[in-house]
Structure formats: structure tokens, C-alpha cells
Image (cartoon, rainbow, N blue to C red):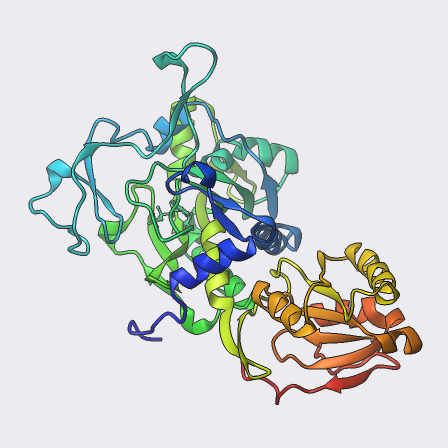
Length: 460
Ligand code: ATP
């Protein structure tokens, strides 16, 4: 992979598809929209849910060294003093319009970003946290903040989790939730917004094992994206240079994706050392430590933090899945989502609206809905309906035709290859389950047959 790699799709196409098909809308659109806030429509909410579910499954459900947490968005204000987020409240800051690093305006000798040479914003008193008031009186004593990251909820609950789960090091806490940042420079659709969702892991380790676990999580997280279909050419690791490192970080890598506007951070993996537990111990007066049975000592664990964005993942999966090819002599747009991420897994398409076909089709629809998000579409020609499903990334369509009434068989059409097989209705559910977990289309159930081969096995 070289720096010259070109993104395959432009942002306008993705934004337009998302709006047209109901993935993502501007927030409060009827009032002209709210800058950098977005609403996920009927398909977007399914995509997002699937991303979160795939993450939770990989990092919590399938592991015995991880547990989940759902901390509140509003936290005690001292949290943000301890974390360092309140620092700089009274400082004039400038932000680089290119790489978004922030600098103390009074520290800079020249007009450009010391990191990348990009143009800087005007200096202003700035804190990225949204402020609000708790209780009826809007006075300073009641100020609270909307959390700018989910991480702190996991640090302050370290002892609670340790005491209640009796986990031994190394172990981790995982959390998915909303975070808010009053970003100076936003844009690029859902890439950088002021309200977004994070999927974060805080993995607690013995201090002298931090490097080994850092490398482990970097690989693990990189592979998660690849397993879910992100092309290897479009994803890479980027190490933070010393001057880029956050105040808490000993080492940090970004997992970067080749977005339409270029390479940019999808997830950050940081070695936060013992900074967080030490800071919260200092500020709360409560000990946050771990008794090591081996050394018979209390230690402050180091923390490895893989921190991902749900919205940036959604954008990356959308861009990576987007493709255009020719179907039956006409251009088609197709989202080649991994089946685990596809908003709708199966679409039921009766060949005609006539009751004779609609009745059994609806029966199949009702049956499959128990297992998966299933679509039903009887409007317009079958070709148009296939195109509609392709454009939203539905992996399989099931067609019920007049012959189905006689032979009790239906056709399954695969989105990517457009190949079709014919299977007995009573085998449909198990066949689809197998195909959705990756079985080749042409592995046939008893009584099944290859129906239509659209083209030689597609290369993608
Ligand atoms: P950036 O440098 O792009 O602003 P960051 O380094 O500040 O990102 P982190 O604090 O490491 O981001 O947050 C972890 C993850 O949360 C990011 O990798 C990203 O996926 C997501 N994220 C952070 N800020 C935003 C935002 N404003 N909008 C959408 N997602 C975000």
C-alpha cells in the first residue's frame, strides 16, 4: 500500500445514497439542519446496531477476560479535572484545519501548524467539552459536562468491576456510548461530528507487560475490520510521533482508513500507562489498585485502550462496500456489505402482486422475520427490485413465482455474483442461515438446484 492510493468513491455519492435510501439524514433537517449532527434513518440504525453487535461479540461475548459497562453520560465534574480535560479552559487555542491538532496560540512562533504546516484557526478561549447545569439553578457550582469520551466511566468504575467480577489481570472493560465534543472544525459527513458514539476498551495489565498487550490489541483490532470486509489496501497503521502523543499516552497508533477525503483515523490504540488510575486516586482520595498475588504487592495497572468510533466505522464500511458494475446491461450501484453488517439480510420478492403469490410470500416473510431483519417488496419489475436491494446491501433476495405454487420451491439470488439457486421452501431457512454465515451459494440443500449463473464467479 502506498500513500498515493486513491479512494474509490467520492463522498457526494455516499452522502446522496445515505439520504436517498434512508441511512443518514441531517439532524433537524426541516429547520435547516444542525451543524455536525446527524440522524440515522431506518437502514442506518440497523447498520450501526450491527457494527456495535459485531464489536461487542468480538470483544466481550467471545472472551473470558472482558466485561461490559454502561456508565452515565453526565459524570462528577472532578472527573474532568483528574483526566486533564478541563485544563486549557482559560487558554487561547488554535486548531490546525488540516490535521486538527490543537496548539496553545501563545506557544507558537509562526502562523502554521508545527506538525503538518497546515493553516490554523483564529485563537480562542476553548474547551471541547459541552457544558450544562445540573438542578434548577444555573450557577457555577452546578456545572456538569457532557462526556467527551466514554473512557473515564470505565476508569472510575475500575474498583467496582474488580470487586464484583473478581477478575485477575489482565482483564478489560468495554463500553459503547455517546460522546460529545464541541469540535472547532467539523465536516466530512459523519466523520467528525459534535455528537458521536464510541466503542472503547480499557484493558488493565501488569505494568511490565504493557508492550506485549499493546501489540496484541493493535493486531486484534486491525484484524476485526478486515474480517468484516474492509479491504487490506484501504486500511493501515500509523504510529504517533512523540509530539503528537496525548498527555497520558506512552505509545499510540492510529488505525487509519482511506476515506474519500484521504487517509484518516478510524480507531486509536493507546498505551495510557498508569496515568488514569493514578490521577483518579489522587483526585478522589480513593485507592484504585490491584493486589498482585504473585508479588504480594498493591500495584496500579497500566491501561491499553483501543478506542473506536461507531460513526467513523459506519462511514468506512459504507465506503468500502460501495461498488458499481453492470447488471443485465445496465449500471448498478451495490453495497457489498459483509452479511453481519447488512441492514436487511433477506428480501422477499413475489414475482407478482397477485394474491396467489402474495399470500405464500407473506407467510415466508413472517417466518424469516423471526430470525433476521427481512424486507418485503412487491412494487415494480423484479429487475428494479433486485437493484433496490443491491443498493442497500441486502445479501440475498428470495423470489416466489407461479411455479413455486406447484413445486414448493423458491429462488435465492445472491447480491454480489447475482447467481441464483432454487430450493424447497422447507429448506429455505436453514439454507439462508448457512449462506449468511459464509457457505458458498452452490452448496445445495436436498432437492435444490443451480438456477441461473449470471457470470463466472465474480473477482470481488
Ligand atoms: P481526531 O484526531 O480525528 O479528532 P481523536 O484522536 O481526537 O480523533 P480519540 O480521542 O482517539 O479521537 O477518539 C477515539 C475515536 O472516537 C476516534 O478514533 C474516532 O473514531 C472517534 N471520534 C473522535 N472524535 C470524533 C468526532 N468528532 N466525530 C466522530 N467520531 C469521533
